Amino acid sequence: MKRHGPPRMIVTDKLRSYSAAMKVIGNAGRQETERWLNNRAENSHLPFRRRERTMQRFRSIETLQKFASIHASVHNHFDQQHHLISRHHFNSSRDVALD
Image (cartoon, rainbow, N blue to C red; front, side, top):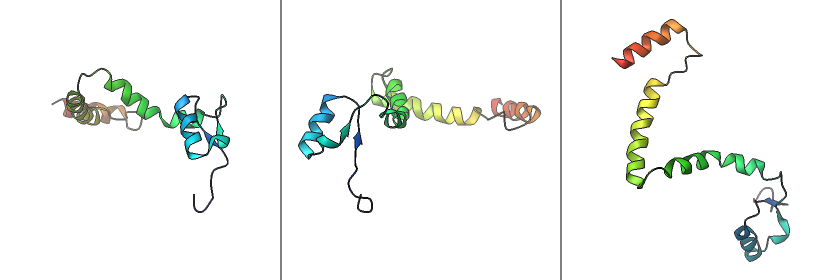
């Protein structure tokens, strides 16, 4: 912000809390809430939304953390990008992983 100065417009969705916060900090005139302007911001939040959707299935954060740690190690071990290697090499490495 020091180099480029204050933003000309701030793109948000139409939540009422955003407009209230903009009034408090004095940026209500810079807020844009039009229909397609928010696509870039919303698409950048997709990993968080995916994580939130996964978290809804668990009753506590501890069980989620247990599942995520085990799932990550298993996924990294077995999920080989077989479109990048030959079929023979993929089959042999999969057999080694299963053993």
